[in-house]
Each structure stands twice: as structure tokens, then as C-alpha cells.
Amino acid sequence: MKLSKYVKLGILMVFTIFVLIWGLSYLKGHDFFKPVDYYYSRYERVDGLQESSLVTVNGYRVGNVKDIRFANDKSGDLIVTFMIDNDFRIPVKSIARIVSSDIMGSRSVKLVFSGEEAYYQAGDTIPGEIESDLKEQVSMQVLPLKYKAEELLSTLDSAITVLTVIFNEDAREDLAESFENINRTINNLELTSADLQQLMSAEKSNLGRLIRNMEGFSSTLNNNSAHFDNIITKLAAITDTLASQPLTPLFADLSDAVNSIHFILKKVNSDQSSAGLLLNDDELYNNLTGLTTNLELLLADIRSNPKKYIHFSAFDFGKQVYINSPESDASGSQSILYRIRLITSRQQLPPESTLFEKAGVISEMNINGEFTYFSGEYAYYADAEKARIILLRNFPDATVVPFRNGKIIPLERALRLQAK
Image 1: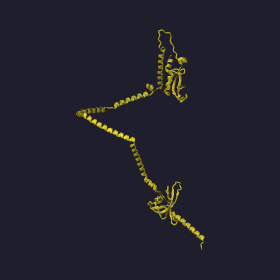
Image 2: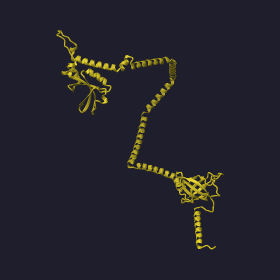
Image 3: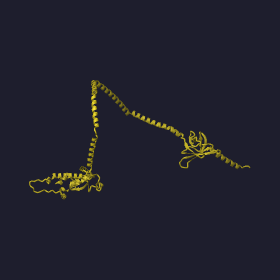
Image 4: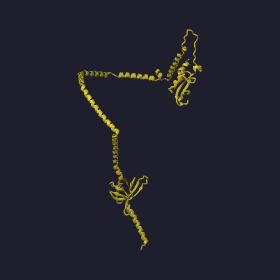
């Protein structure tokens, strides 16, 4: 049968396409006519490994890289597929290491055998490693040199700084001054040694006499060593006697005395004794303070009006009567009122402030641009003093201030006017 030219052309095209596909596959390392097994390996990175890269064992090619793709678990790892001749066996625990195949940085896969008796099966995953590239190896070798160079440069910088300081003009002057001081010190030492030599020459006889006296004193001590031994023996006997005496009664007496003092102090600090009441009872203290204040007022009144308390006359024409009553405050001296000054502030404070919570009725007065606050109004100084003593707990600077017709007057004048 005779084929037409179109059939021949078709057969030629099919053959040509087949040869082209086979050639491309062969160039990629896959031979259709040679059976292969596929193995896999997982890497974090491949560092330039390409498809069709060689797979070698001890430098001998046993396969090629078929495919490189990302893992399906979205971890970013890469899965590399190897084509290995089916008559080649890989022991288990072997490693597929990505290495540099030439100086240009091309990558290939080197199989490092483990020496095990068992072998991987087609489709198994071989553990993968990545060999450091030339750059990393050079960096690792150069890094210690870099550190040493940096240390050397810092040392040189310190040395240059020291030299700069030394050869500075001020430093040179300081060095010259230091050498001058050293020379002066040496001269002073020479003068001192000369003076010592002169002193030794002048006092040679006295030094000899002193040495002889010391020898005599040492000989005296040597001659009286028996007496010193006797004294030491007597001291030892005294200490032995003291040690043999019972000290327990003495310590017992001391303990009883301490206990007695402790009991007395406990009674003083409690409210069960007169001394304790005197020290701890605030009311008793306030009463005593008020009593002394009343006594002071009484003495002042006696000095101002002696006739009020002592009356002596050869002829008795009648008694004078002195009346001190609040009703007479409307006239003259009895219009004096006493207030307790609590606090003075540059800023105005509201009367309802919590500061004046226990101070009673509060009044305010502006004195020289400052605000002074007073508490209460009392017709007699003794009443005001009692209130002041109570307020001292919250206002340590509280004082009694007398007013007459709305104006502040001295306390002595107020007491004198009230005593009339």
C-alpha cells in the first residue's frame, strides 16, 4: 500500500514531537526508557536548588530533582521530589543534604548514607539538611577576626587617647611640674638626712646615756622578776577567790530590784494609782491648768484691788461691795469679750470647713491681708482659757485674744480693766 505524502508528513510530525518531548525530558534528567523511583524530602529553604538538579552519592549521579513545591500544611516548608534509578537502594536514616556543586553556587542534593541494613521504599520521605554556603562559611571564619580587629581598634583608640592626653600642652606642663616636685622632694630628703646626721652627731652622748638607762631598767626588771611573780600569784589568788564566791544571790537581788522598778513603772502608766492618774488623766490635767489660771487671775485681782479682800480701818463706816456680773458689761471695762484665735491663713477658709468641725461658732477677721479665725465669745478670761485648753488638741497654736468694742486689746490691759 502506497502512503500519501500527507500521511508521511503526519508520521514525521508525530515522530518529531515525540523526539522533542523525549529530548526535553532527557535534558531534565528523566529518561522514558529507564524506570525510576520517586522519593521526597522536606526543607525550610532550598537556597537555589532547581528542578533537574543532580542527586549524587559520593559524587556519582544517581538521579535528579523532579519537582519542588510548597507543603500543603501552610507552614512554608518546601517538598522536593527526587527521581532515583529503581535499581538503587537508599538505607534508612540516610540524609538528603543540599550542597554547593561548584564555585558558582549551583546547588545539588547529596545523599549521605547511614550504613543501616534496611532501605527506604519508593515514595518514602528522606530527612533533609542544608549545607552552609560559601558566604556563610567565609562569614563564620572571618567573624572572629572581625571581633579581634574591633578589640584591637578600641585598644589603639584608647592608646591614642592616652598619648594625646600625655602630649597635650597642659599635660606636658603637669608632667614638668610633677618632675619638679619629685626633684624638690628628693632635695628635701637629702636635707632631712643631713639634719638627722647632724642631730645624731650632736646627741650621740645623750643617745648613749638613754641606751644605758634602758639597759639598767631592763636589768632592774630582771632582778625583781621574783617580786613580779609574787604579785601575779596574789592577783591570781584574788581572781580565784572572786570566782569561788556564789554570784547567784547577787543576780537574784538585781532581778528583784528590776522587777520592783518594772512594777512601779507599770503602776505609774496605769490609771490605778495617784501618779498614774496625774500623768494619764487629761481631765485632771485640764482642771489643774484651770486652777492655776484662776489662781493667777485671783492674784492679779488681789494686787489690783487689795481693799476688796483685806479691810482694815480704825473707824468702820461701812463695807464696800464689789460686784462682777455679766449685766454690768454694757458700761466701761465690762464690755470686754474673749475669743480664741485658732488659725491664720493667707487663703480664706469657709466656716463650715471640716477643720472647724469641733471648734464651735467660728468668726473671721481680715488682719493685714491675712484671714484670722476665732472661736466663741466669753465674758471672763477663765472660761476662755478652759475652752482654749480643750481646743489645743486640734489647734496647737490656739490663744486667748481680748476684744473691746470690736477691737483687739492687750491681754494685760483687759485683765486690769476687768479687775477694777
